[in-house]
Each structure stands twice: as structure tokens, then as C-alpha cells.
Image 1 (cartoon, rainbow, N blue to C red):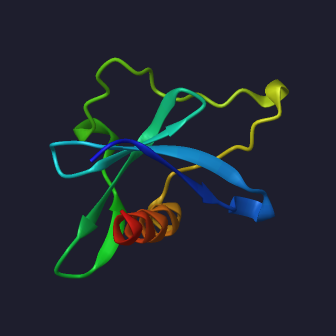
Image 2: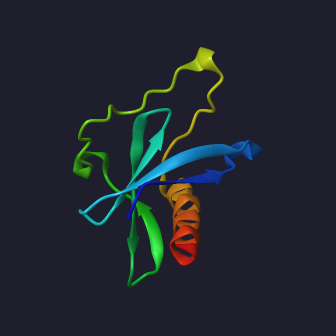
Image 3: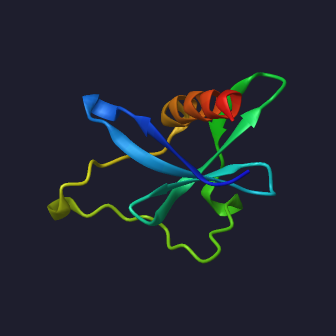
Length: 96
């Protein structure tokens, strides 16, 4: 599967994230050219979870670090955010 973009609205502001599927069974979440983290779907429970940072293989992309002065929304990838991102991934997979 090719990378694709999704939109979410943390704190009521729309944010575009790039989703990079991996062969390791999880999806890297990219924000402003850096890896915010990764999410995976637990099929038996049918829910999305954050992949522990130490299990994410960064590859060529740097890890994302928030910079206050550039107008970016501060995003924390936790299980709540992973669930919202996962819903968008599910929707994209249904369309593709």
C-alpha cells in the first residue's frame, strides 16, 4: 500500500498527517517530515493502539520534535489519538 494523507482535528484544528504503511504490520504517522510515532490495529479487539516508540524503525526519516514558534499544532500520539488516526486509516482502506 502506498503512503496516503489523512485529516484529523485535535483540539478543533484540522491537521494533515501522512500515513506510511510498513511491512512490519504498523503504520508510521508523519507530521512535518518527521515520524510522530506509529499505530497498529489489534484485529481481535478491533481497536487501534500506539506502537511503543522503541519498536518503531525510523528508517530515513527523523523523529518529529515540536517547535513552538512555527505555528504547528502540538500533537501527542497517545492511544486516544491512535484511535482517531486508526478510524481514518480504516476509512481510507475501505475506499482504496
